[in-house]
Length: 225
Image (tube, rainbow, N blue to C red; front, side, top):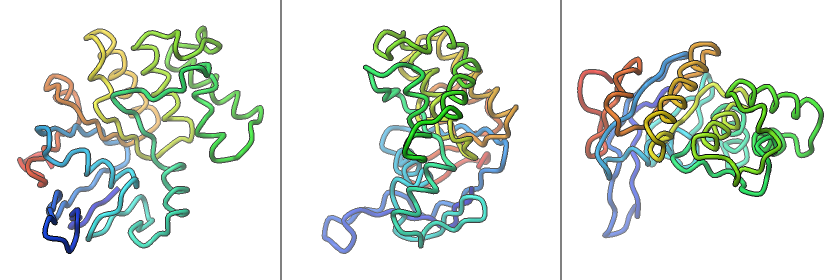
């Protein structure tokens, strides 16, 4: 993934126009695990929304693999996002009444339009990989916070994404559960070569990443970017 001089402004052309990202240059290589840190309001969420193809930059270029994304239409962006990028949020966003297995199947179902045996098998494999095969039939509402976040990790991996975006995925977890989720992401990163952007306010977790990207006032600062 590569960003070249990416800028993002809101209310463009209006008296209240404000630029949130100021010419971001960033490359995330295959198999790299990067922490993203910065104070609230620094532009981290805006940066993640653009990297995740949830929003478009005002100017600059964003490439996912060999695909330059800024000129793609909405349908093409949706396809690329669904197949190339996995998301894990601070709040797991599981469907409470659906089972763990059904939640993990959702990205595959959204891509194909109908369920099949391969989806079921893939979801079971992923739940096993996060240590929750015994909870596959339990509704998400009956899982603990740590278990729910592990299901969210499995769901994010369903489409074998090249890039995994983790937006404070341990922020609502106790220390033990946070360590389990981080170790799980690190294991996926190393075994599958999945690139990870890991937004966190936890310095001890950031130190365990390959490098740290610090965002301050909409720009990258420091020597590690």
